[in-house]
Image (cartoon, rainbow, N blue to C red; front, side, top):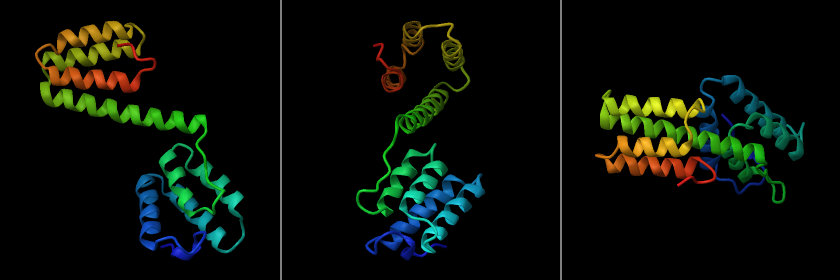
Length: 170
C-alpha cells in the first residue's frame, strides 16, 4: 500500500490519500493492470524518476475516461499544476452520468410496472428513439400518455429528458 509521503507536500491527510487510492482500486476492480499502472506512476514519482509534468501526463492517460479520478488527483499536485478537464473529458463525464440516470430511470419504471404493458411499451418507445425512428417530441407525448396514471414516473422521465437532452425539447 502507498504511504502518504509519496504525495506532493506533507499536508496530505494519509486517510484521504488512502481513500483516493481505494477509490482507484474499486474503479478498476476488473482492470487490475490500470490500478497497477497507477501504483507504478506513484512509485516512479517517489523515486524521483519522473516529475509532476510526467505524472500529470500519465495520470491523464490512465484516467481519461474517469473525470472524477482526474480531478481527485489535483489534491496531490503542487499549486499551479492542476489537471483541467478538456472537452473530451467533460463529454465522457456527461455521457457516463446520462447512462447512469437512464439505468436508474428504467429500473424505477420496471419496479413500478413490473413486466406489464407500460414497461414493455416504454422500452419499445425508447428503442425506437435510439434508432432514430421517433423524434423526442413523439417520445415525450407517447410516454406522457403511457404514464398518465403515474405522474411520479412521468415527472422522473421529464427530469431525465431535461438533464440528458440538449437543447431541452420541453
